[in-house]
Length: 343
Image (cartoon, rainbow, N blue to C red; front, side, top):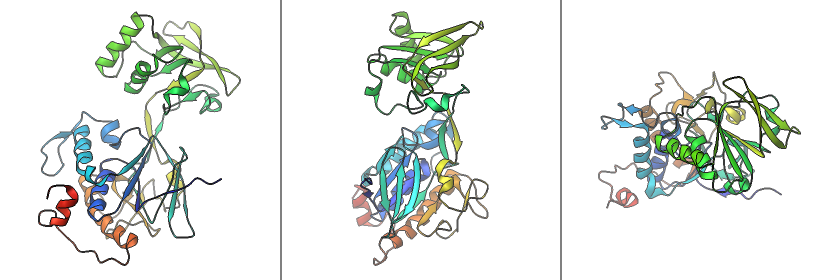
């Protein structure tokens, strides 16, 4: 049975700064947006890779961190109530008989809209797969790279691998409901927030969480259902731990993923677009931000903002071909100010 589709005006793949600002420009034109992103929070690279890194080239903002920029963009688009489908990868794209773009995700979400905007930066963030023999057979059965439903891990023996925020956060969050939690990291030094590290060490001291310094070298099971993991310590000593599930948080890498299969004339991992509308070679599909290319392209956030503004004008003509679009300024238009809640 086919999944019932959620209909909207515009589907945006990628919830980084350019995707978020696109919501604003589209919202001014009364276009509703749904966004899909593989990360579990909006912000793209700014939120995931450099939330504390200062940015100096946002117009009229002398300096802000990556996370501050994301927070301000989220506040700016709040009046337009965008719908986020986070922690999901766009897996397939088809055209319906009615001329709508039908996008499906790996979380069984199905969206339909007359306009699709690719704002995926350099591609999708993909989890790094640890170099453990035979791990692919266990993936999505016993081995996971993200937590979507905490309850599936209740009463289970969990091994969590990694030393960053994700590994520490889920160690703290799953410890109260799991049968056991063992955190494995190659060294006794963590990249996570100090408060999280301190709380983890308190749980270790209390015997609630186990901490193993070493590397996972093998998975023990039937090739799909996990029974335990083998760990090699820094002293080259081998030990085995019982495990129903392995949660591996070894970071993220940038890959095109299924987007590359959408038939968008990729050239060296970027999508050629025109500079009038930033439309791809496929009518109704646009690309903005670092994922696109044209003569003179600069990979700057401010360039992506400009591209989003022009894209929105073209998107309106596709969604509402019978409506005349009147250009307005937010400084003088009472109708735009009412949409923004500042009238």
